[in-house]
Image 1 (spheres, rainbow, N blue to C red):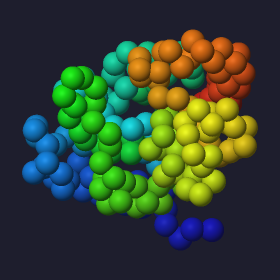
Image 2 (image 1 turned 90 degrees about the horizontal axis):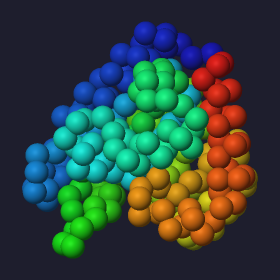
Image 3 (image 1 turned 180 degrees about the vertical axis):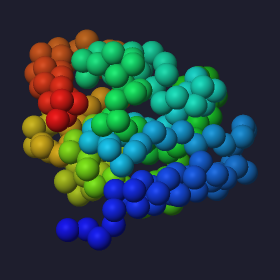
Image 4 (image 1 turned 180 degrees about the horizontal axis):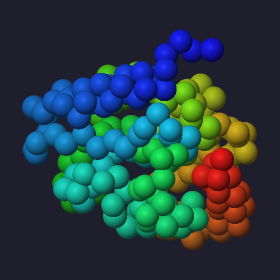
Length: 204
């Protein structure tokens, strides 16, 4: 049994989150002021692992506060209030700051520096996590390492292989709409399981 009290766990996590939110490691490379966005607590049991905040999330400071969040909430079977207010749900992308936009549209990929600096330390402070949703290739490769099958498509198709601790999902971005339309099995097989599992976690 751990000798650290629940209040000590919360204080330790709070200290780390303050460090993350004060991070300016990428400031010289960004065209905007860094704004790390992360929402977790010691009660987090469902961890949503995306890629990086988009422009709208950067402006609001609220993870998945955009159309991709609407799609994700539908996959999970939760409303907006539950999504943001239930203590079991946590959100920590592979990069905490909006990386900027590529010429011609679309967001830049999450810089690896952020995960190298913070991710292992943060996950150590979240011992109650039962299920991680790995959305997109960067999150999947970081979490699965050599067990990752090589592509997002392959990882999602093999979603049962990583249970019970993780599920590989496409990122809920509009950019994956064509993939979802071409793979109706995802809505038929993965979404029902995901909704049931999320409901169980939120009830416990």
